[in-house]
Length: 146
Image 1 (cartoon, rainbow, N blue to C red):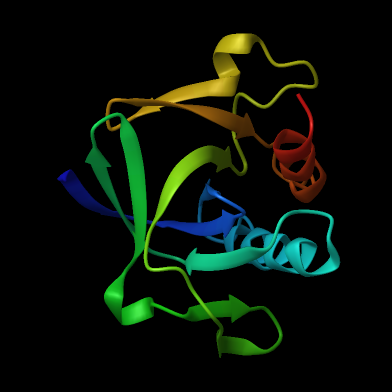
Image 2: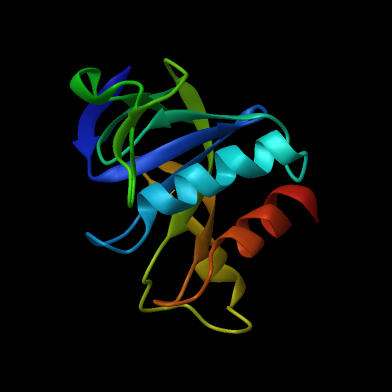
């Protein structure tokens, strides 16, 4: 493993694919993480479990980007209106999708180059989401359609 870095982001393991959720403070990272977990419970997505909320660690191994919870925050998620709650979590997962909330380059029909990003040397599919736009339908679509 290399490039072990802590980033301000949340991550959820959906089936075999981790979704890394980035964005400015207050953009809805925790909300999207919890929405993905709920979508996994209802069957809209494969079973989903938290990797980390608010801060996660990224490592590159081979051609894969791994995400792990920050140890002091493992198993904790912020639910607006309830506070910090405990929930099951995954120790690590391979990032297969990046969601950028409040993205400046979000468009109705984004160009192909906006839908991928190179992070820590690994090319990963990406969804840029405009501020104020509901990200869950886009993520569900990205994970369930081609």
